[in-house]
Length: 113
Image 1 (cartoon, helix red, strand yellow):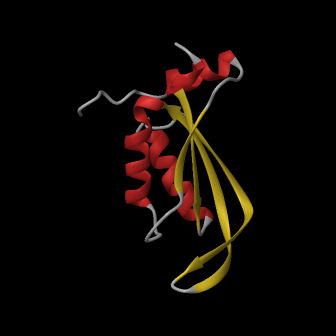
Image 2 (cartoon, one colour):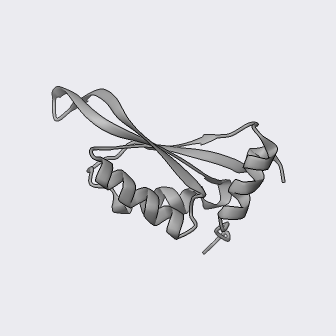
């Protein structure tokens, strides 16, 4: 396989508890290989006509491209936000053994299922 079949899913949440719940569920369901949680994120955005400044948890999840859509859908289902930030980013290179491990830990979702 090539490096291009690996993606990262970037997401933010309002609490560590929510982040841990989402990440643990997706790893358990083998939709992602792993997730990194980082506290201390400050987000500035407009919501309901007002500028907001909030503390959030950033989550970076690693998976295969064929599982990304299902992982995003499941993360959205588990999320507490009305409109969560969940984006998928292509991985174009990296440590070959790590990328192999991501593939081994993630069960690809068959097209059309």
